Image (cartoon, rainbow, N blue to C red; front, top):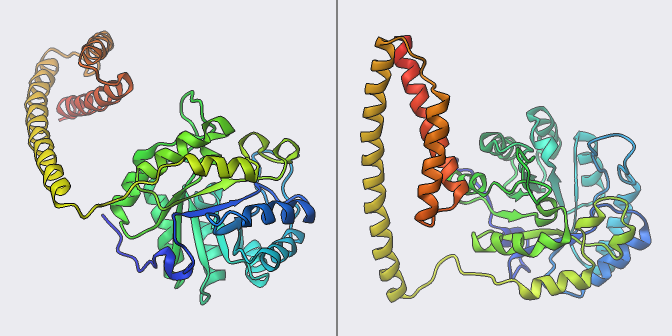
Length: 362
């Protein structure tokens, strides 16, 4: 079920916005000099609208650099004073939130680990109640769109209308080139359920490596996202956290130069007419697919009753292995993506087993 929350467009709280929202700055603030020098270079690029800097860094294991702490808020104040850029940082609990608000931090974001805990989100919501804070919420570490939406509900119930979602990827459940699995379908589902919620992408945390930043950022814009949050450090080789995924301000500018920003819609009648014709063809084919699937499931039911009569288990692993191999092979001949075919038939097979199990239990 969709959520119709009162959410302000970005331009309402950031009136100088004239391009997609770009938030840039170091993963962690490490010194006053590092914070200011990076900010001054980024401020020269008018595509950068907000400066980000981690003050408190929740790490997976103790012993890693966990941020400079509250002193970093003073450096953010200096950045704002010296460059005029709004500043933002991550808050992971009520105390962080109180300190950040007191320091005049313009944008607060809730990290993936914190989003996963409704208790933490509620504590933060209680602190920001009655303020005009801008709050961004990163996706939880697992692809749970309801948990993500719940965080926005809690923030919105505190009277906050300036909200943005940040897609930073999910904990990988299989081997991947990226640090975090993008799982774009979860972001698509969030947009479907909360169509008025601005969504930006954090390519740095998805990629984990500089070499993948462009492809992820371009994909984000191709999917109609509202902006990017990218980590930028004056000297990434010396960074105390996540050095492999940070860009110098100069390299960030080169990446931005290459990006193609596409329109979400166009006022061209000829284009719209042709698009509508193509979409009608898709609608017709989808109807055929569903009819075929319905017929398939009727046969699955017959098999279920036959297995029950003969006291045979619902799951036949040899048959499943043969089916998967043959469908993947067939898909290749039809130029279908192997992963897509596997996922599709895994879903079909799971529901087939469910149906046959229910038959046997009744």
